[in-house]
Length: 339
Image 1 (cartoon, rainbow, N blue to C red):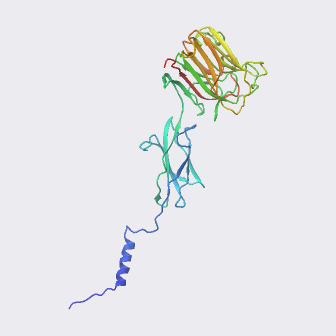
Image 2: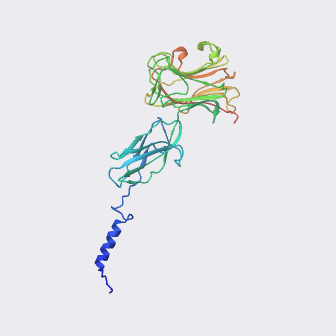
């Protein structure tokens, strides 16, 4: 005898619904979409003053309890990740991470992403920053022999006293100095930023912003290759508050400039140039520019070619460094007058 089995449409639908609910492909909750965070600081392409900079993103959205992953790499494809962190808790508006371990100098790329409740959001756009620790080279690199920011808590030169602060190297007393030894450079330049200058000076005595000399040719006061930029004040002299002395192989020349309206909050940029200037003069020339303006100028005949070429911030040999001056962004290089 043949039996017939009857199954109602309602029963069939219920079974299908149960099967669908129990299969692995079926969602168990509404899907979560987490947005990408937005890089905020440092600004992309910026130079940072620390080997452990703070990276900050604008928060992602789409879920509660978000945590973040940050990555720093040496390449924009992130094939070489130098530092990373997971599980960084979200801040109220932005989220930050202090890079660890410390970075060496160079260009770096970074990104971040958020995650919560088993869902990971997309990476942010890639941002970049650089960290310049400076360098000193016996051979010019793009005409540069020394690059020294002085805002990273260190110097590529020889440091004698002073203190490193966030704005640069602070001169604590008249014997403080930073010394750079460069190859003999008959045609060159020295430039630097300096702030916290005022009138009168902290001590109304002879004070100097920088010097050059040859230590193999005797002590400083009798040296045949000595150069200085001096800063006097109105308590000490009645004129010539900025002075240049340039002695090349025994030939001395001097110039002065009447300026004393210093603003201690302003950063002043100084640049000393020396050597041949074929388009300007047939002899040698030394000039000083302050904030791009030529303020001191003298011609000389003897080539400036010391056997050992020292460049120094301050004037330690005579205890005449300018107290409380703050230096940064030192660059020393060669000029190529025939190019």
